[in-house]
Length: 279
Image 1 (cartoon, rainbow, N blue to C red):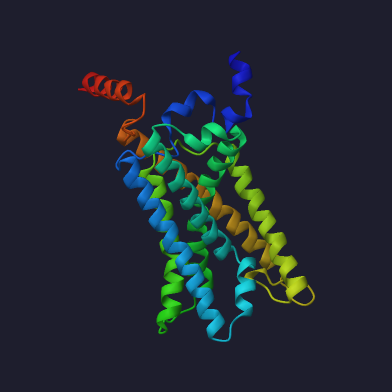
Image 2 (cartoon, one colour):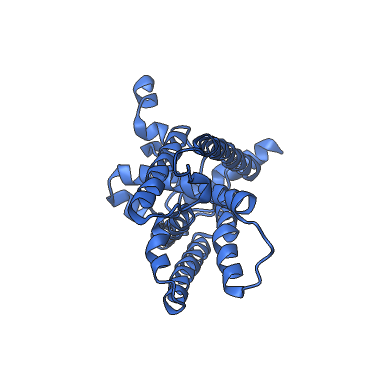
């Protein structure tokens, strides 16, 4: 029986039914559920507002082509990802705050809960990769003199990592399942395919370090960059995993539950008993 459970894909992805009562994707150890839903919603609103404002700026300043081209950039795709994650996470958290249960998760197929967990892994690792690659490789200085460019790059290459840190430190999630690392690498491979598809269909490289040259003379350099990015994502996966583990250890399982959660009283008693036992 235990062996079968250990081989369950849902168990490996940390969405086994036995964990449902913890509501790890909907709760915070610091903020009450409704406040946490508002914070996530505000972040999502800011991200989508900034995206459409930037597009409006492109459209009114002779750069309309950049709107369509933006979907070929890993920075933009990651930024969209954070926005959508925060949107859905705020909805899940608000539903839990008002009903005391996982309203949508309970109705939807469990596979969607697993995908939500994998989504969480991407938005707590990829933003750090975007920030490091931009400021470490792509940015050549001097500091921005154009207010619009400065704001856009701070939003997409700076605040993105802040949002990831907030999700790592405020949520009650468990450390990432190791299986999600394979998903992160697979998505990066898909992006490389998209980048070269963009070059062959649109005629431009999304990032200069992917340019192999007219005759492939820079292939070795491009390969080196690809392995460097792989190493970076491995580092940030471990970094994110360790921060979550440390947060859970320091908070000792604390959860700000909904007032309507039927498990709230029992959970409070358990926390008190643990604190008494440790004292």
